[in-house]
Image 1 (cartoon, helix red, strand yellow):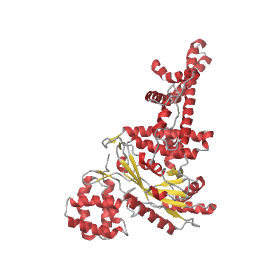
Image 2 (cartoon, one colour):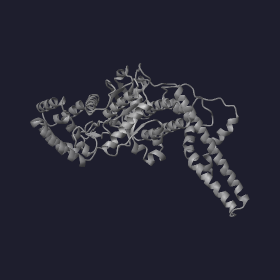
Image 3 (cartoon, helix red, strand yellow):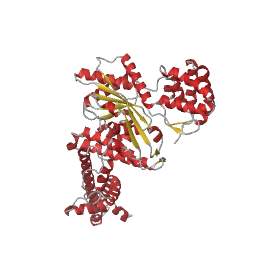
Image 4 (cartoon, rainbow, N blue to C red):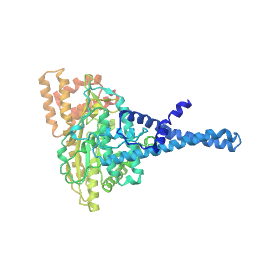
Length: 538
């Protein structure tokens, strides 16, 4: 036991002893990375819990001597061992802070470095021999965002574990930059680049390819940007800043993407804020918090405060008008398909037609534009519609495994400039809300996907004539009301068994009537059925 305990102090002792020798920094080799990774894992416990344990034991020895329970000679050797262990732990903590500072300076010097270059140098730095922080061997471009290895797509849990460890690593760098006076002035740039590296690192671990479409639409954007995206997976937070990092901007500096996050989830939750320190990192990164609870006036005031923070901080905000992630879906044969868009949220929200897209994004854009006008700044707000396709099927809601060797596609639509209004009018909110909803529908291609999926199910039971009749009904509704597609989306939220049971009734509704009353009746039945239906699992 004692030998195993003392073995945790071998590497820092050797590193401390070699400090007085002349050592030429080396490039990070595989051996140095392995030794450094072991030391990094040991130091996480040794320099925190171990430091407390040695301190408590040393104090107990002192108290025992002062109370006369132990003779002085009996505690000299143990007390010296405690002091030595405490000194080694403190020196190890100092070395870790030095490495974090070097890592942040490396990120500032090399804007689009490959995350593997950063990780190799940082973890090799925990080995006894010093590491040279040379230029990265590879940089990130739109052409190098393909991290696939050529294997077979399958769900794996190990990349999720490594992604969690990498998330804690980047969170620690953000906290270190916020607490270090020399780095605090460049904190906004540090956060921007760490978010890009974080996204590339997680895509690399999961062996994903990130395809970006429509990046040319961002060529001439100016002012503050509000990115409105669909929400199907936790990966949406990862790929959004990574894709927007390559925007060919000519009229402004690079985008400073921050998220509108829930206050009760990150600030008021002790587990996330203190224990995991994720909330502390989110706060230090300059994310904008909003209160999801309370009465409508309180939520309105919270959104207005968020708009003022957005203007004062000069950051660009990414928001998800759906409010929550869409659930994974399966077709009638039980095959996993991409999550939908319309059928999202609680049963009470599903019962409200059009409740799939909240007005908060439109209201925030107009409030930010009004705040800019009141402050006298000659800037405006630009709303950027963005859709992430493939992430929901790769890492669905509630999943603990991720599907490797897959492709995530990010589509960027044509931005819309919001001129500063003197005050926010509800008619403007409704108009902008409809525009955002329509753009997200177009970019996600949800109507085409639902129609294609339903056509396959109809073809399995009926001839082509039946589908032509149903398609006519869908086409007639497509321009004015998304109710038929909302109905299909909710239908595919059911379990495969429930889908097979209700498919005939749904086909008859589209083929024979197609009226709004018939669709609403069918919709109410599906809402009631979805409450007790077993959700698809991965």
